[in-house]
Length: 448
Image (cartoon, rainbow, N blue to C red):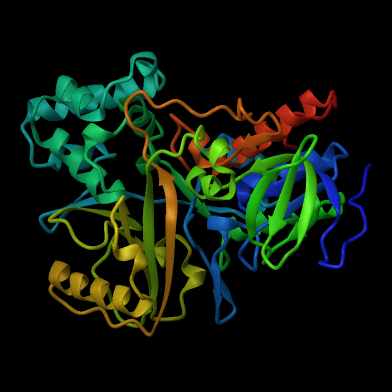
């Protein structure tokens, strides 16, 4: 195994074979596979802890989830990583319903009873059931000739309540109309049956943070260098081949290959203009999340509720203690309010945390007719949370055509899957595999 060279005066190695820029789950998965195959690897992350969106936050001896709340039992790639890191045995499973809040009424459309009680004509309900069944049987059907999601829905369902429901949901969750979304992506979302599966958690802890920690520990144990609190300021092509990775504070490292495990809009800022011009940047949604400890009863019966109509500043409500009771103190509810948007200058994602909480609390009172009085709050803002997959979207090349020593990983490469933990992990794992094959290095493809 090739180890990383001794550090320079900046505390960084002078060179490595692969530099991973972005220490989230995709980057850590790539680093683990590369280090396992004997490559010298350095991982750079701007935040003080590794994990990216996967890292939660600590309070009073507990670790609460950040962007990833639950383990989805149908996410096979995620199951493989949890099993390989020994975490799957710690996961506890609960049946959890996903509700849609429409004009003050909660509807669980993933259940036959919830579908029957939905305020729509029976014929529309039957068409909705047939459409869902078709997606479950053939999730990839129609991906070759993709249209916009609104056209697909109107052809399948007509102009009734369900087409309007999906459009309202897309505006609430992504800040765009269903006409701006790929029908193949929405079909994959329906096929995932996320609202009718088991959700998992690690009691009293955040499973996503645990997974990030486990991947980092395994990569480091195999010789990878991990550098949190080291934001990369620029990626410059080296004189002969490879890249110079310039880090804030004046440090730098020479790398034969770079894995960019971060959103393309951020990567474009690091590359020279001529390299950034060919990068598929696309549109991205943001998320603003406020987790609150509430020492009084709250009118939320479901773990996950989507606010459909009327629209509010937040689009989703989570009762985290419904899934993971050990996160709450006696008599406490743990509520997570999350808002999403896209391409909005001066949007909520740029507001101060106190202002965000103030606005969320006012919206809560308007929605439920009673105040929410949290004992504590924690606000997180993620400017580049998820790509918006338009009609005809295709994943960018993992190995960039104009920069063969530059590989991409992360959510931009997950179409038409639901952009979540498993696809993100797979993107990093596959990028590492491509690098190893290009170097003529044989490795174990399986995660475990």
